[in-house]
Image (cartoon, rainbow, N blue to C red):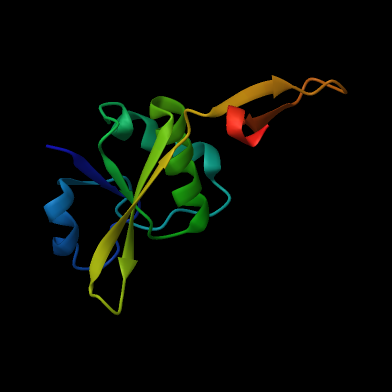
Amino acid sequence: MPKVYIVSKGYHDWSAAERFGKIIFLARDQMERTSVSFMLRTFIPKMRGSKPDDFIVVTGLTVMCVIAAAIFVLKHKRLNLLLWNAPKGDYEQRLIPFDDIELEKNPKGSMYYAMVKASEDER
């Protein structure tokens, strides 16, 4: 069964997300927005058992969602999001593959940047 990683528990009713998998809370409360190292150290152990078919619910502080998404992408080369659609009263899936992203060295320095591989038809 897939897992649904909810970035910040808050006081919401998460029952609509349960149909996508087992609920895992990465944080019970909001964290200090500048404590990104703490977020990383908190989320990594909780996401260690994640699988490519799991989901992340976008909720809470933006920086918390960014950290969770970065961990997931680095681990699985894809990002599976559940986004709340208020008019429908339900979650919608957004599945984003990152397997066509490669890192190349910046010729002017040691920083890396991502470049999407172009298919033969696009060249």
